[in-house]
Image (cartoon, rainbow over all chains, first blue to last red; front, side, top):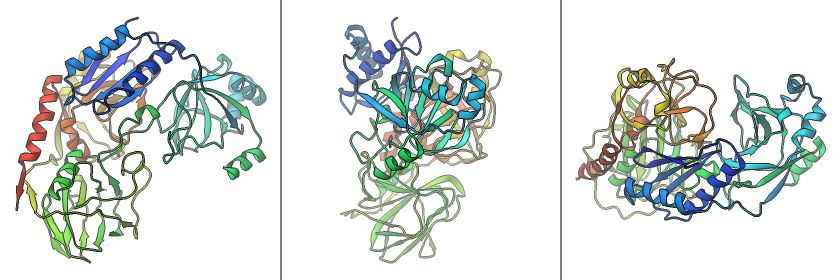
Length: 224
Length: 299
């Protein structure tokens, strides 16, 4: 279970944990990230968490590559990756009328109502934020909802779109291209650059979706 | 203030970008050619973190509303000040009301306009760099900071603006997943830059296909300079406005000392890749810093 360290350049170190996507890896990556965020900000320039890895951008003028790798190895050797005892829980409203709901209903042999019930049935974990500012990678999706992403991504997915792909579900913070299957849309903002923190979700948060209708969606947007 | 008379094709405010926000999905941003930004700032005696105007492919037209020292660095956009051709890589005084105009890029693809005192648009998340969406528009008034610049400077630094370039790299996170054949082809073939390239990534038209069974893999962190290979086999070199994570195999990492070349390569450019060690990559970064400073000459 020892993580592997790869210096991929003179200023980037990729730390990989074995075992792929799992809640225990989510906790390992998150605790390591939180430790490194407390290190000297001139040394640690950026951290890119993912399902089972953490990419660290560091400044080699602050510490040699060799010493940096040794220091990280020490942390991995001695630090207990303690699971968090408490989580923030967020409830996210969704107006389920997404572009892919009908097609998914046929593909999964489920009614749209069943798809919505299943999507709202679980508490998801924010495995990490990536792809776009504030985009939460949420998992794990109920087995009955697992479908591959679109073979050709859409060039236009609107901000707030709630979508699924494989074991994951997520929310697009802004208009962009995207290949996930769209179930609906949330009126909440995910990326607010002038606020602190600038993202609505944080790594490790727990998220539940609940359905709203069009009137509620519009009043939520207007009332924001 | 600088008044934007005509913005050009894709003109933004850029500084050295954002740091320590990747874990929120926020990419670094910043100047696509960091060496040119650095030099442009040095020429007008600005600190390295000062913001400048970045132009891509087609330059803009600007009126200086008060007298200011400025410098251009980067690609050759045939710049004129009040109709007179001026040099790149040198600082000048623009009198109040002067008009600076850049045309199409003849060499390279990005130019930087730095003014003494720097551009002082509001900071967002610790940087003045565009968050990827905001471009300058005709009529915009761009605020400029106070400056005490006294001297004029010239740089003899030679940027890599040629239609063919050699980019040096270190082994990427997935180097060992690729076959010896793919390794050999990466370092022997010439890869053509696609017109679909932008500040998110440089797309290459030449394929490394057959090199790897490119099934969907677990998403991992990616950064500036990462050479990814999607299922099409056509590599993408990630640039500043990249996504912070990606699902494609990472064959290589272009060294930081060659980022200027990445920011200046035009569609149709031929790129060749040369593998070096981590120690060499670090030595190149140190040597580059020395060369930048040694290239400056007071006028």
